[in-house]
Every structure is written in C-alpha cells, then in structure tokens.
Image 1 (cartoon, rainbow, N blue to C red):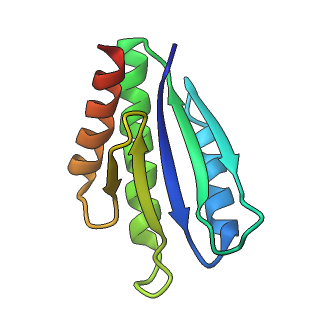
Image 2: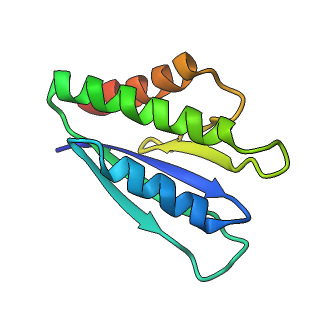
Length: 116
C-alpha cells in the first residue's frame, strides 16, 4: 500500500498544472492521478501516491518537494497558483508560503502518519 496525498490546485491556466502532473509522473515510485473538474471554478486535484519502501520514498519526497517549491515560486505574483496539500486524514496545508524544508516536512509527516 502507498501513501496518498492530494494537491488541490487553482490556477488560471490549467496547462501549467498539466506540466506539473507530467513532471510528477517522471518520479520513480510515484503514482499520479490528475482530476480536472468540468466546472472551471473548481480546483484541479492531483493525487500523488508515494511507495512504502523507505529509501525510495525519501527520494520521491525530496523530488516532489523540489518540484512543488519550484512550481509555486516560478510564477509571477499575479499568476501564482494556490496549492493546498490534503492528507488522507483530511488535514489541509497551503504550500505557497512554506519553505522547501517545510513542504518536505509536511509530506514526510503525512507519509509517516499513513505508514503507522
């Protein structure tokens, strides 16, 4: 079984989110499901499954963290997407104001919480 986190993403251009999805799918040991709602105002959901193997999971979490941080901080202030990480327990965290280390900690804690 794998750890699953969900990213709720709002962005004016869904093409940027498709690019993020593609980059996440390139990470070894990660399963990605992209759910694009028909309602343009509803957030896009990106479900990210992280494998259970410790070393592989740690590498995947580092890569996911790097991609999310770069994605959030590469856009200009007016185009910046809003990404909320939702754990399987229902906890929500806005990733935009977080540092790379903070994002990594949130994902690591979610992974540890589901592994217990």
